Image 1 (cartoon, rainbow, N blue to C red):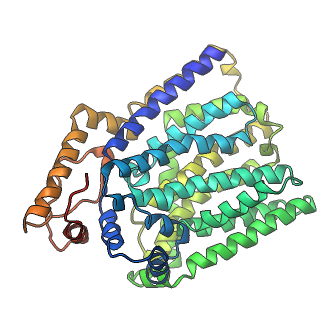
Image 2: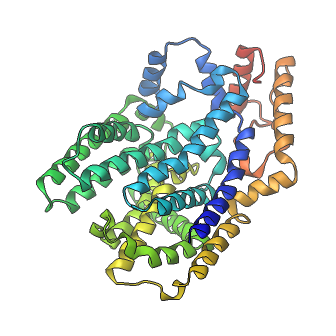
Image 3: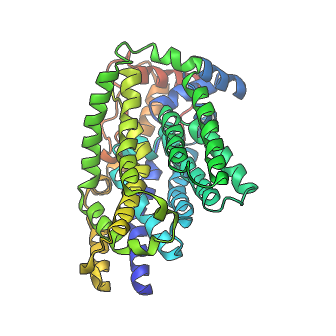
Amino acid sequence: MNRYRTLIVVLLVIAFLPFCYVCLYALPYADDFCIGWELMQGKPLLTSIADQYLYWNGRYTSDVLINLHPIATGSLAVYSLVVFISLLATPFVYYLFLQVVVKQRAAAVIASLLFTLLYFNYMPQLAEGIYWYGGVVNYHLGALALLLQLRFFIQLYTNAERKGISYGFSLLLLILSVGFNEVAALLIPLFYAVVFAYSYKGAIASRRLVAIHLVLAVMAACFVVLSPGNATRLGQFSNHYDLLNSFTKSAGQTLRFSGTWLFTYPVLVCSILTMHYAPMLRGSILAKVDWRIALAGAFGVIFIAAFVPYFATGILGQHRTMNYVYPFFILLWFMAVVCFANRYAFHIALIKAKHVKVVLLVSAIMLMQVSSNISAIYRDLRFNTFAKYKAEYIARQQQILNGPNGVKPLVHMPNSLAITDASYDSSYWVNGCMQLYYTSAKVPLR
């Protein structure tokens, strides 16, 4: 069976490589130039962070990272490298999380690569999800930080007498995770509230552990939500705080995205295989989870990701919040499948043959190569769009520096790197930020 595992791992790594390749063409855009210009004003780091908290948002974790923006180096290679490192960290973080749930190392490796591939291939906005520094530090790294935090929490919960370093990491990562974005500020305290209610009749040590995490999560969330900067930013929107509209539209988005993510051949195949292997997880923490709670959680994270922007601004806006919750949707869905299969002894006898299982999984991996985000990358490679995009990007920098002709939008734009570019309208905010940045920098990014 080892040769089959090796085959699966090799195929998953090959499917992962196109996402790594695109990092070579991950270039600064939109807000990156606004931040770049701000960084050139020479403000002390703490002053810049305080200004953002007081006048723009309460994201105390991501605001620190934003002010360490790689555009300050003036190097396109550094920008691409930072994006690549954050992308490469994803399967490792998934593996660390799955290690405490799936005890078999080979299964954890395959599952971590598979979940990473599902996450990257079906996230709604690929460019803003993993190739744009602003999206990385506000949402992608926020998701990874929370996965790491949950890893330490599960370790503590399943072995309550273990404290020390694990306890410290869990609490520190909890504080950091809440501070990445507003969805996290609502989602994380809600999660711990549910866990507290669910474990209320359990051991005193477990209840105390959950209670401490819940109180800390609520305090951190208040620091985000009640920040002066949030009030200032939300004051720009006139149709916010409509509870009924937010609920109805969020319910619609929940149906939309859950349907999009679930009714794909790879997810259906992986769900069938998960049912088959579910008995192997009867001794894990999943044995204590009600499948209905896991299923409600899967749909609930989508609802929250839609509700927060609808309630705060009156619009869904970009799909960045959906990018953020999709990794948790994947985990909760497969958790529900495992718990359901074990609860009702619902295991698929059809795939007992080793070859059938391998063929099913290989077919799912191969189909992902010709669908969704990976297929968009291959189309861009086929038409050499990446090289044309970077060449035009570099040429435009010099045009901005050479003359007063303003900022023009790029002609060649990869489908897999769909970004918020400049406009023919010279008053557009992206044009303004680019003009300010290059006027101040006086040299192009290299």
